[in-house]
Amino acid sequence: MPFDTPSAAGRSSSRERQEANDAELNRQRFAPKRHPLTPERWRLLVRGHVQGVGYRAACKRRATELGLAGWVRNCADGSVEIQAEGVQQHLAELRVWCEAGPTAARVDSVLTSMLAPTGADWFEIRPSQTNANK
Image (cartoon, rainbow, N blue to C red):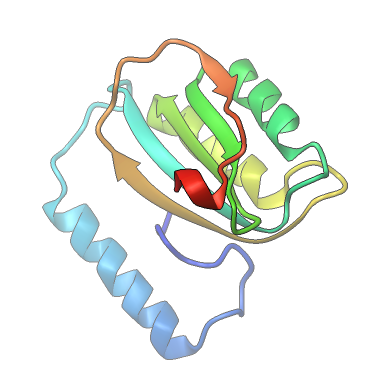
């Protein structure tokens, strides 16, 4: 699964896709080998029409169903930020869900990056981010 690429196919040039593929291959080649059940923490930044459509509540439900910990919040720029922690398979399932979101949402992209696990054991909806608390 490539990180930091648009979720919809065809939104980038072939050169950009090749660069993204090359970057993913390098990440895979040099990344430490992890056991599939080792907890990871991912940050997902979802862009599109994702505020005012029940995205945070639906995301919390899906993350809880998958047994993930972390949080979701609205960002001042209109995106939704998610930090989720759990096994890689469940995180990947959450990312796939994020690419569609709830029925009223329109997702343009989901950018994904890895963070250090914190050991959190619950998932919450955090207050919306404002320009003052960036």
